Amino acid sequence: MDRSMSLTWLISRIIVYTVTWWVLTKGAGDSWPVGIPAVLAAIYIDFNLFRPENTGWSLGGLIAFVLFFLKSSVYSGIDVVRRVYDPRLPLDPAMVEYPLRLTSSAARNLFICTVSLLPGTLSTAIEGHKLVIHALDVGRPVVHELNIIENRVAAVFKHPVLINNFKTGESKK
Figure 1 (cartoon, rainbow, N blue to C red):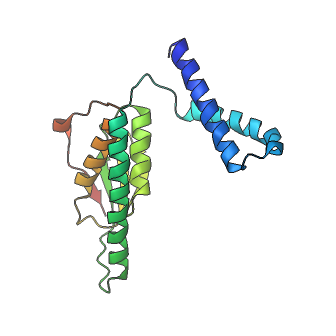
Figure 2: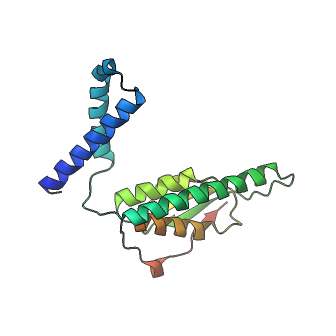
Figure 3: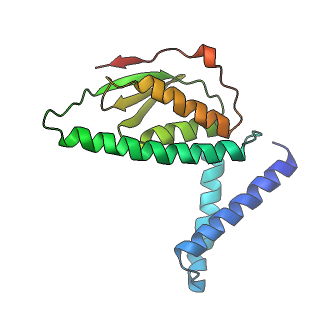
């Protein structure tokens, strides 16, 4: 990481975490003796967990991703509620292995968190280049849905994803 990128990264994190603290405390000036160490700790944790990379991102990809996420959250939530309240309880839970194609750590983190946030799926482990997911119903096209999410995340980070390299995930009961 070059010097200008690291300075930009540091300044952006200081601004984001400082504003976040200010909003959470409703601008209380007497909160800064705790806020300054909290902001510094957040920057330290951010740097160590999510190393800044020299990757770009796409505003259009981000907007499309947010809209996709909101739509998927609503549809998935409705599907989960329908399944839970159906007297037949149409669930077929299983663990699904999904081959990860994203190589950027930031892109992988967003993909894994997105999978966990969407109703009906939960990221449980990373085994090498595979993500293990708990799915409520493997009768659904879970792997196809994961492929769509991964492609949306790839668009956010301008990440080259080999569409033809996609393999079908395996489920474990």
